[in-house]
Image (cartoon, rainbow, N blue to C red; front, top):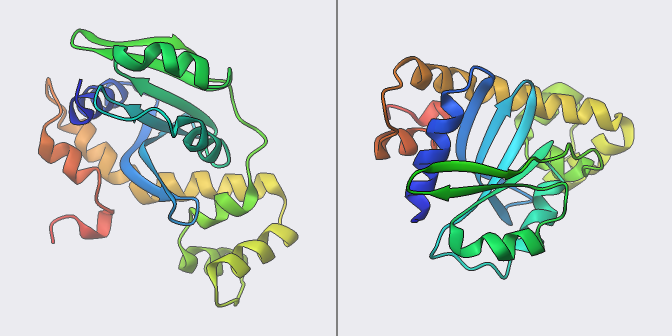
Length: 202
């Protein structure tokens, strides 16, 4: 299956769940080196999804998942059947797996909560202005800001703030789409869930 088809199927599956508060595509993290194909807030936890379509390479998956595990509470790989065997071998046991076929999504392995996240990677996934406002820091560079906060704040407080930021930032547009959900997710829906709320309608 193509990446866009998997995205549409995964988004529809998540939007139908009563526990889903946020869906957003292409979320940048790890100091701009990574983009999560899809993130989801579910029951207060932030889940990262890495998609591997039939046309994607699989050789970078190990490094990608190491980055995901530094930020998200749970991580899933959603793959075409072409890659299922390789994903099983490459993904650590705590990483969940979904198989995507023309007939739907099938969860192959349930993800386990990741608790040994990286505080600096988590802080970097939040905009600079939000960090300054919340933690009252004045450092000029993003890295210096993240390092100072990580030295003065408890790890769990950093994680809680990241969760709250994602839900506050993207919750309203997700709720709007859920209220208008039909039998499918369109390409326009995917596009709108890839835009920050302040860029919608501009």
